[in-house]
Length: 230
Image (tube, rainbow, N blue to C red; front, top):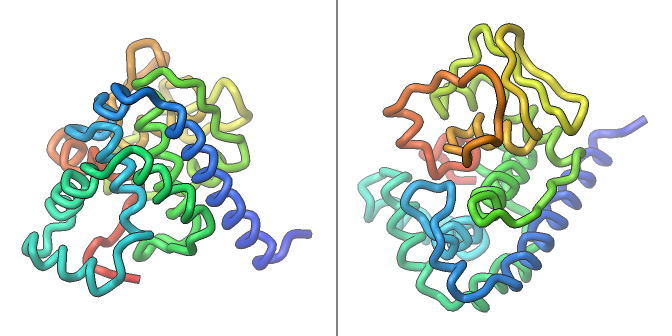
């Protein structure tokens, strides 16, 4: 029987593995791919990597200082910092991820499952449009799916699952009842986070989203209360 400590250890190990695997993918990218668009609206690969590594590089004091510069608007701060920090070389950006594989970070109000979700979703933001084969292991996907099908996440991303059933066709997972929307589990996860997927990734019903909220949260990897700092 698993204990709470075991669960925490499992998630911590999953986070470290996710970061190392993504760092491996990034280290093999040709230079041109670092300028390629991602599923994060307006961000190239380099901006997404800079954003993913921001929690490793920013102290609480620096985070609050950057937030103050953006008048308390986290989305504005995240965009400004990603564009600035993303000017680093690909080697530096990869090192920031690889060297912090075991960095212990909990998003404000989210805990370790949210930290894993943040890394997984943003990794897929990069690999999906580049058509890079990057299969997230089932055990990680189940943690992510449980996190993003909660009411807080659905509200955050403006997703309405009323009368919609989500069903993965690569793992034994489904959620909700109604018209069927199916596809790979990791593609369903991206859709639940408001991402616009390449054509043909999902089949069946459409998710109903609130455009204004969905667009505003398009770069987020996990629902957080950005006014808090852990």
